[in-house]
Length: 255
Image 1 (spheres, rainbow, N blue to C red):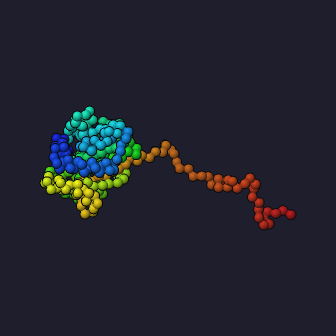
Image 2 (tube, rainbow, N blue to C red):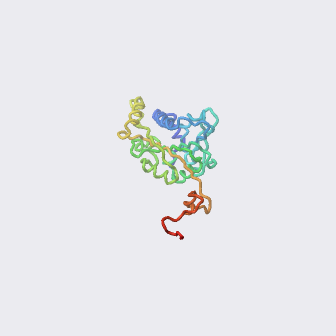
Image 3 (tube, rainbow, N blue to C red):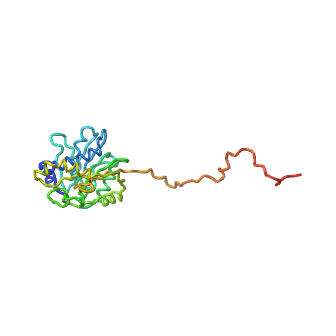
């Protein structure tokens, strides 16, 4: 079930823990995607906190928010780019998107397969998407005081299997949110340390969020009735010469 947009807004923009989570995840997104010049960048779910770095150079930036969640104007003080939509029908043309970020849009959906189908439809050939979901092995999935404590958490193998079944090709993955999900002053002050340490030792510390990058590969279909053609066996003899071969030995001699 989708979270309410007001709860998400309060967490990411008005709490210290939410702002720290936003900074940690956005840092990983920028590392994976350092630029988007002239591209169409779309976020689905509550991905708008991650879209701001792309607004200056992207050709177009859109924040899609599913109906059960609700919508809020974004960004503040600028022309609104957020849109309320059906989670299984996005108001975008097929193949229009170059980069897609899904945050709090997959694990909370009651129809995740339909969400993935729609993501595949709007993404252009060779386009990339980031699916950001709660990590089943992380402590953030066990605390319902944050948005990562709701919905279905994933392991990396589960997430990869699900996106593959919808035609996506997994490319690379990273984790984020190694800091404890606590508002305590000590954890807030040491949050950057835990993020750096966790990234260097991912087998020891489990990040609270999995970030999987996928691509959309489209292959040209064969025309109806097209068949693979094997070369004619007679062509093997081509190029030997214009003269007919002579018999060897005494075979075929005339006196």
